[in-house]
Image (cartoon, rainbow, N blue to C red):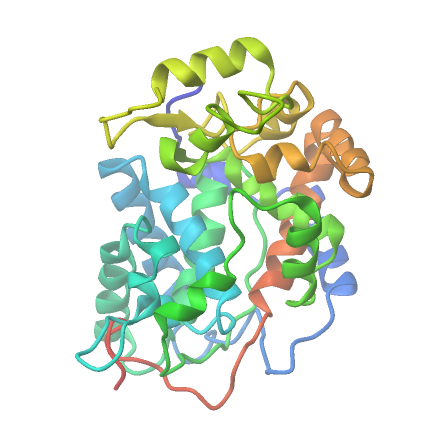
Length: 332
Protein backbone atom coordinates (compact mmCIF):
# COMPACT_ATOMS: atom_id res chain seq x y z
CA UNK A 1 0.00 0.00 0.00
CA UNK A 2 1.43 3.36 -1.01
CA UNK A 3 2.33 5.82 1.72
CA UNK A 4 1.43 3.27 4.37
CA UNK A 5 3.40 4.87 7.19
CA UNK A 6 2.20 7.75 9.34
CA UNK A 7 4.65 10.14 10.94
CA UNK A 8 3.72 11.01 14.50
CA UNK A 9 6.49 13.44 15.43
CA UNK A 10 5.29 16.71 16.83
CA UNK A 11 7.51 18.45 14.27
CA UNK A 12 4.94 17.52 11.65
CA UNK A 13 2.43 19.63 13.51
CA UNK A 14 4.42 22.88 13.30
CA UNK A 15 2.06 25.71 12.41
CA UNK A 16 3.18 27.53 9.28
CA UNK A 17 2.40 31.12 8.38
CA UNK A 18 -0.09 29.83 5.78
CA UNK A 19 -1.83 27.78 8.48
CA UNK A 20 -2.19 30.86 10.67
CA UNK A 21 -3.60 32.83 7.75
CA UNK A 22 -5.99 29.97 7.01
CA UNK A 23 -7.22 29.96 10.60
CA UNK A 24 -7.84 33.72 10.49
CA UNK A 25 -9.93 33.12 7.39
CA UNK A 26 -11.80 30.35 9.19
CA UNK A 27 -12.68 32.67 12.06
CA UNK A 28 -13.98 35.23 9.56
CA UNK A 29 -16.00 32.78 7.50
CA UNK A 30 -17.57 30.57 10.15
CA UNK A 31 -20.56 32.02 12.00
CA UNK A 32 -20.28 31.95 15.73
CA UNK A 33 -21.97 29.11 17.54
CA UNK A 34 -24.96 29.75 19.74
CA UNK A 35 -22.88 28.36 22.57
CA UNK A 36 -19.83 30.23 23.82
CA UNK A 37 -17.22 28.12 22.05
CA UNK A 38 -13.66 29.39 22.18
CA UNK A 39 -10.22 28.11 21.18
CA UNK A 40 -9.08 29.22 24.66
CA UNK A 41 -11.91 27.61 26.65
CA UNK A 42 -9.59 25.43 28.79
CA UNK A 43 -6.60 27.79 28.97
CA UNK A 44 -7.18 28.48 32.68
CA UNK A 45 -9.08 25.39 33.84
CA UNK A 46 -7.09 22.66 32.05
CA UNK A 47 -4.21 24.07 30.00
CA UNK A 48 -2.72 20.60 29.44
CA UNK A 49 -5.95 19.18 27.96
CA UNK A 50 -4.97 19.24 24.30
CA UNK A 51 -1.54 17.77 24.96
CA UNK A 52 -3.06 14.92 27.00
CA UNK A 53 -5.46 14.13 24.16
CA UNK A 54 -2.73 14.38 21.51
CA UNK A 55 -0.36 12.04 23.35
CA UNK A 56 -3.14 9.51 23.89
CA UNK A 57 -4.22 9.61 20.23
CA UNK A 58 -0.64 9.39 18.98
CA UNK A 59 0.22 6.38 21.14
CA UNK A 60 -2.99 4.58 20.18
CA UNK A 61 -2.36 5.25 16.48
CA UNK A 62 1.14 3.84 16.67
CA UNK A 63 -0.29 0.69 18.23
CA UNK A 64 -3.20 0.48 15.76
CA UNK A 65 -2.94 2.34 12.40
CA UNK A 66 -6.73 2.09 11.98
CA UNK A 67 -7.33 4.53 14.84
CA UNK A 68 -7.06 7.80 12.84
CA UNK A 69 -9.77 6.89 10.33
CA UNK A 70 -12.00 5.51 13.07
CA UNK A 71 -11.80 8.60 15.28
CA UNK A 72 -12.43 10.93 12.34
CA UNK A 73 -15.51 8.92 11.42
CA UNK A 74 -16.61 8.97 15.07
CA UNK A 75 -16.67 12.78 15.04
CA UNK A 76 -18.87 12.83 11.92
CA UNK A 77 -21.29 10.24 13.25
CA UNK A 78 -21.59 12.02 16.58
CA UNK A 79 -22.19 15.50 15.16
CA UNK A 80 -24.74 14.37 12.57
CA UNK A 81 -27.07 12.96 15.24
CA UNK A 82 -28.22 15.43 17.94
CA UNK A 83 -25.20 17.61 17.18
CA UNK A 84 -21.70 17.38 18.68
CA UNK A 85 -22.71 16.21 22.16
CA UNK A 86 -20.90 12.86 22.51
CA UNK A 87 -24.24 11.01 22.42
CA UNK A 88 -22.51 8.41 20.22
CA UNK A 89 -20.31 7.41 23.16
CA UNK A 90 -23.16 6.46 25.49
CA UNK A 91 -23.78 2.76 26.11
CA UNK A 92 -27.21 1.22 25.66
CA UNK A 93 -29.24 0.62 28.79
CA UNK A 94 -31.87 -1.97 29.64
CA UNK A 95 -34.64 0.34 28.53
CA UNK A 96 -32.99 2.17 25.66
CA UNK A 97 -30.80 1.19 22.71
CA UNK A 98 -28.12 3.86 22.14
CA UNK A 99 -26.65 5.34 18.95
CA UNK A 100 -23.53 3.19 19.02
CA UNK A 101 -25.76 0.13 18.60
CA UNK A 102 -27.70 1.57 15.66
CA UNK A 103 -27.02 -0.25 12.33
CA UNK A 104 -24.77 2.45 10.77
CA UNK A 105 -22.65 2.63 13.92
CA UNK A 106 -22.02 -1.07 14.54
CA UNK A 107 -18.76 -0.69 12.62
CA UNK A 108 -17.62 2.43 14.52
CA UNK A 109 -14.60 1.39 16.55
CA UNK A 110 -11.87 2.62 18.91
CA UNK A 111 -14.13 4.06 21.62
CA UNK A 112 -11.45 2.88 24.06
CA UNK A 113 -9.10 5.62 22.80
CA UNK A 114 -11.53 8.37 23.81
CA UNK A 115 -12.15 6.60 27.13
CA UNK A 116 -8.40 6.47 27.77
CA UNK A 117 -7.97 10.17 27.04
CA UNK A 118 -10.93 11.02 29.25
CA UNK A 119 -9.55 8.94 32.14
CA UNK A 120 -6.29 10.90 31.99
CA UNK A 121 -8.14 14.20 31.77
CA UNK A 122 -10.21 13.37 34.84
CA UNK A 123 -7.03 12.77 36.82
CA UNK A 124 -5.49 16.05 35.62
CA UNK A 125 -8.59 18.26 35.61
CA UNK A 126 -11.63 16.58 37.22
CA UNK A 127 -15.10 17.41 35.86
CA UNK A 128 -13.72 19.93 33.36
CA UNK A 129 -13.25 18.67 29.78
CA UNK A 130 -16.36 17.34 28.03
CA UNK A 131 -16.36 14.11 26.04
CA UNK A 132 -17.74 16.09 23.10
CA UNK A 133 -14.65 18.31 23.11
CA UNK A 134 -12.38 15.27 23.36
CA UNK A 135 -13.89 13.87 20.13
CA UNK A 136 -13.55 17.22 18.34
CA UNK A 137 -9.91 17.64 19.36
CA UNK A 138 -9.13 14.00 18.52
CA UNK A 139 -10.59 14.45 15.02
CA UNK A 140 -8.28 17.39 14.39
CA UNK A 141 -5.27 15.53 15.78
CA UNK A 142 -5.69 12.41 13.64
CA UNK A 143 -5.96 14.55 10.50
CA UNK A 144 -2.82 16.53 11.40
CA UNK A 145 -0.91 13.37 12.35
CA UNK A 146 -1.82 11.89 8.96
CA UNK A 147 -0.12 14.87 7.22
CA UNK A 148 -3.35 16.79 6.71
CA UNK A 149 -4.29 20.33 7.81
CA UNK A 150 -4.29 21.62 11.37
CA UNK A 151 -6.90 23.99 12.80
CA UNK A 152 -7.63 25.52 16.17
CA UNK A 153 -10.56 23.61 17.64
CA UNK A 154 -13.27 25.73 19.23
CA UNK A 155 -14.12 24.25 22.63
CA UNK A 156 -16.77 24.50 25.32
CA UNK A 157 -19.28 21.85 24.22
CA UNK A 158 -21.26 20.01 26.86
CA UNK A 159 -22.28 16.35 26.78
CA UNK A 160 -25.85 15.30 26.08
CA UNK A 161 -27.82 12.78 28.11
CA UNK A 162 -29.92 11.22 25.33
CA UNK A 163 -28.80 8.63 22.77
CA UNK A 164 -31.28 6.76 20.57
CA UNK A 165 -30.33 4.05 18.08
CA UNK A 166 -33.33 4.69 15.84
CA UNK A 167 -32.10 8.22 15.11
CA UNK A 168 -29.05 6.86 13.29
CA UNK A 169 -31.26 6.32 10.25
CA UNK A 170 -30.56 10.00 9.58
CA UNK A 171 -26.83 9.42 8.97
CA UNK A 172 -25.68 9.87 5.35
CA UNK A 173 -25.43 6.55 3.55
CA UNK A 174 -22.73 5.29 1.15
CA UNK A 175 -25.64 4.58 -1.20
CA UNK A 176 -27.04 8.13 -1.12
CA UNK A 177 -27.33 10.27 -4.24
CA UNK A 178 -26.06 13.84 -4.28
CA UNK A 179 -29.48 15.43 -3.78
CA UNK A 180 -30.04 13.38 -0.63
CA UNK A 181 -26.60 14.32 0.66
CA UNK A 182 -27.11 18.03 -0.04
CA UNK A 183 -30.41 17.91 1.84
CA UNK A 184 -28.89 16.03 4.79
CA UNK A 185 -25.97 18.42 5.12
CA UNK A 186 -28.25 21.42 4.60
CA UNK A 187 -30.38 20.43 7.60
CA UNK A 188 -27.23 20.82 9.68
CA UNK A 189 -26.34 24.23 8.29
CA UNK A 190 -23.70 22.86 5.92
CA UNK A 191 -23.57 23.86 2.25
CA UNK A 192 -22.58 22.10 -0.96
CA UNK A 193 -18.90 23.04 -0.61
CA UNK A 194 -18.95 21.67 2.96
CA UNK A 195 -20.42 18.42 1.64
CA UNK A 196 -17.65 17.96 -0.92
CA UNK A 197 -14.88 19.07 1.44
CA UNK A 198 -16.01 16.87 4.34
CA UNK A 199 -16.43 13.89 2.00
CA UNK A 200 -12.66 14.17 1.61
CA UNK A 201 -12.36 12.56 5.04
CA UNK A 202 -12.72 9.34 3.07
CA UNK A 203 -9.07 9.80 2.10
CA UNK A 204 -8.45 7.89 5.34
CA UNK A 205 -9.88 4.46 5.89
CA UNK A 206 -11.28 1.21 4.62
CA UNK A 207 -14.73 -0.06 3.69
CA UNK A 208 -16.13 -3.57 3.89
CA UNK A 209 -17.79 -5.03 0.80
CA UNK A 210 -21.29 -4.58 2.19
CA UNK A 211 -21.05 -0.80 1.74
CA UNK A 212 -20.41 -0.92 -2.00
CA UNK A 213 -20.99 -4.45 -3.39
CA UNK A 214 -24.46 -3.43 -4.64
CA UNK A 215 -22.62 -1.35 -7.26
CA UNK A 216 -20.84 -4.44 -8.57
CA UNK A 217 -23.55 -7.07 -9.03
CA UNK A 218 -27.06 -6.83 -10.48
CA UNK A 219 -26.91 -3.04 -10.28
CA UNK A 220 -29.96 -2.45 -12.49
CA UNK A 221 -31.97 -4.01 -15.30
CA UNK A 222 -29.80 -2.14 -17.80
CA UNK A 223 -26.39 -2.57 -16.17
CA UNK A 224 -24.90 -5.48 -14.24
CA UNK A 225 -22.41 -3.06 -12.61
CA UNK A 226 -22.67 0.65 -11.89
CA UNK A 227 -21.58 2.27 -15.19
CA UNK A 228 -19.94 5.14 -13.30
CA UNK A 229 -17.21 2.75 -12.04
CA UNK A 230 -14.07 2.60 -14.19
CA UNK A 231 -14.05 -0.88 -15.78
CA UNK A 232 -10.67 -2.17 -14.54
CA UNK A 233 -11.38 -0.86 -11.04
CA UNK A 234 -14.76 -2.63 -11.10
CA UNK A 235 -13.06 -5.91 -12.03
CA UNK A 236 -10.64 -5.59 -9.11
CA UNK A 237 -13.48 -4.86 -6.70
CA UNK A 238 -15.43 -7.89 -7.95
CA UNK A 239 -12.44 -10.11 -7.21
CA UNK A 240 -12.32 -8.81 -3.63
CA UNK A 241 -16.11 -8.83 -3.21
CA UNK A 242 -17.67 -11.73 -5.20
CA UNK A 243 -21.43 -12.21 -5.29
CA UNK A 244 -21.37 -14.89 -2.60
CA UNK A 245 -18.70 -13.29 -0.47
CA UNK A 246 -18.00 -15.24 2.72
CA UNK A 247 -15.07 -13.16 3.95
CA UNK A 248 -16.56 -10.59 6.33
CA UNK A 249 -13.23 -8.77 6.49
CA UNK A 250 -13.00 -8.26 2.74
CA UNK A 251 -13.22 -4.76 1.32
CA UNK A 252 -11.30 -1.90 -0.22
CA UNK A 253 -9.31 1.12 0.95
CA UNK A 254 -11.15 4.34 0.15
CA UNK A 255 -8.14 5.69 -1.70
CA UNK A 256 -4.69 4.41 -2.66
CA UNK A 257 -2.93 6.38 0.10
CA UNK A 258 -5.33 5.46 2.88
CA UNK A 259 -2.98 6.26 5.77
CA UNK A 260 -2.17 9.74 4.47
CA UNK A 261 -4.56 12.66 4.48
CA UNK A 262 -4.27 14.09 0.96
CA UNK A 263 -6.39 14.87 -2.11
CA UNK A 264 -5.94 11.44 -3.71
CA UNK A 265 -9.61 10.69 -2.93
CA UNK A 266 -10.73 13.42 -5.35
CA UNK A 267 -8.28 12.38 -8.04
CA UNK A 268 -9.70 8.87 -7.94
CA UNK A 269 -13.26 10.13 -8.20
CA UNK A 270 -12.37 12.02 -11.39
CA UNK A 271 -11.14 8.68 -12.79
CA UNK A 272 -14.30 6.77 -11.87
CA UNK A 273 -12.62 5.05 -8.94
CA UNK A 274 -14.77 6.21 -6.04
CA UNK A 275 -15.53 3.24 -3.78
CA UNK A 276 -18.88 4.43 -2.43
CA UNK A 277 -21.75 5.25 -4.73
CA UNK A 278 -22.21 8.47 -2.73
CA UNK A 279 -18.60 9.44 -3.46
CA UNK A 280 -18.75 8.81 -7.19
CA UNK A 281 -22.12 10.58 -7.40
CA UNK A 282 -20.36 13.84 -6.50
CA UNK A 283 -18.65 13.75 -9.89
CA UNK A 284 -21.86 13.05 -11.76
CA UNK A 285 -23.71 16.12 -10.49
CA UNK A 286 -23.15 19.63 -11.86
CA UNK A 287 -23.61 21.11 -8.38
CA UNK A 288 -20.55 19.29 -7.03
CA UNK A 289 -18.41 18.23 -10.02
CA UNK A 290 -16.46 21.49 -10.33
CA UNK A 291 -15.65 21.47 -6.60
CA UNK A 292 -14.32 17.90 -6.88
CA UNK A 293 -12.17 19.00 -9.82
CA UNK A 294 -10.80 21.99 -7.90
CA UNK A 295 -9.84 19.86 -4.89
CA UNK A 296 -8.28 17.21 -7.14
CA UNK A 297 -6.07 19.87 -8.73
CA UNK A 298 -5.21 21.89 -5.61
CA UNK A 299 -4.48 20.05 -2.37
CA UNK A 300 -3.84 23.26 -0.43
CA UNK A 301 -7.31 24.50 -1.40
CA UNK A 302 -8.82 21.23 -0.20
CA UNK A 303 -6.94 21.45 3.12
CA UNK A 304 -8.13 25.02 3.68
CA UNK A 305 -11.77 24.23 2.88
CA UNK A 306 -11.71 21.02 4.90
CA UNK A 307 -10.50 22.89 8.00
CA UNK A 308 -13.22 25.53 7.55
CA UNK A 309 -15.91 22.87 7.14
CA UNK A 310 -14.69 20.90 10.16
CA UNK A 311 -15.05 23.98 12.35
CA UNK A 312 -18.58 24.47 10.98
CA UNK A 313 -19.43 20.81 11.59
CA UNK A 314 -18.10 21.13 15.13
CA UNK A 315 -20.65 23.91 15.73
CA UNK A 316 -23.65 21.75 14.83
CA UNK A 317 -26.11 21.29 17.68
CA UNK A 318 -23.75 22.51 20.40
CA UNK A 319 -25.51 22.64 23.78
CA UNK A 320 -24.78 24.64 26.92
CA UNK A 321 -27.23 22.95 29.26
CA UNK A 322 -25.62 19.52 29.17
CA UNK A 323 -23.08 18.07 31.54
CA UNK A 324 -19.40 17.15 31.57
CA UNK A 325 -19.50 13.37 31.88
CA UNK A 326 -17.01 11.80 34.23
CA UNK A 327 -17.09 8.64 32.10
CA UNK A 328 -18.00 9.04 28.45
CA UNK A 329 -20.07 5.86 28.16
CA UNK A 330 -22.58 6.73 30.91
CA UNK A 331 -24.39 9.88 32.05
CA UNK A 332 -23.42 11.29 35.43
